Image 1 (cartoon, rainbow over the protein chains, first blue to last red):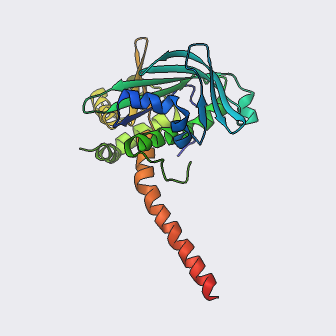
Image 2 (cartoon, rainbow over the protein chains, first blue to last red; image 1 turned 30 degrees about the horizontal axis):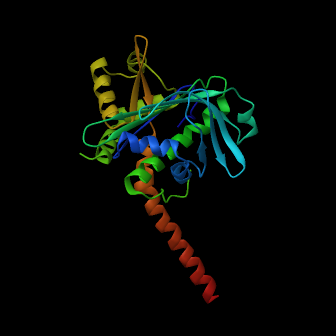
Image 3 (cartoon, each protein chain N blue to C red; image 1 turned 45 degrees about the horizontal axis):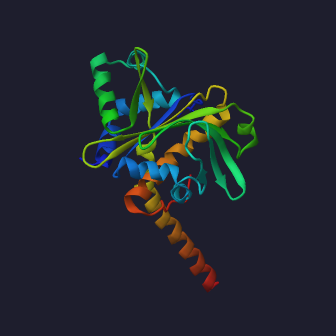
Length: 152
Length: 106
């Protein structure tokens, strides 16, 4: 198979047996994010203009700014990865979380990571990461347990 | 049909796997672009894309007048986490048991 070229727009979607409010909490509360987002804590007030920080211990792994926030259906923020020097030298990209209720107690969560044109290393890194994060988020909400796999 | 059934059904067809490979190489394509690379009618390609969309393997976005198709790898990740990882873990622990047994008797 040919290798994937870095995509400037990436879309990830998952159906979760949970309410939109539960999905919103899982995205915005640190006690949840540590269980599926590579052990990181989310740190933000989620007010437009406020910082979006993903932290582990004393390290900030991702920084950004909240662009739009409408609980429990939309969260949009910028993304600048600091966990790797190559990615840290790249431009800010953008992440949009859309939460839509479906029939039968199911909620659709769509993550769009775009504006990655000037951030090829970030595009390459997050291409595997988002699937892992969303699979873990679904497992956590549906079973109450973190995903027991070895990771990426 | 469960979510997993839809994914396995969608992946059971070579044309649909080919469409996913095309999107893997370059994402965000229109029906016209995808159709131009296949020896198939537009209607046939649409039908396959619809099954991929129902399985969640393809997500569409409107951009202006265009409808763009994106590969969504999350359902494959879910299959991996629920099925493949489970059996691989057992295999690894069986090997670990064998190693400790051999080393204990040595």
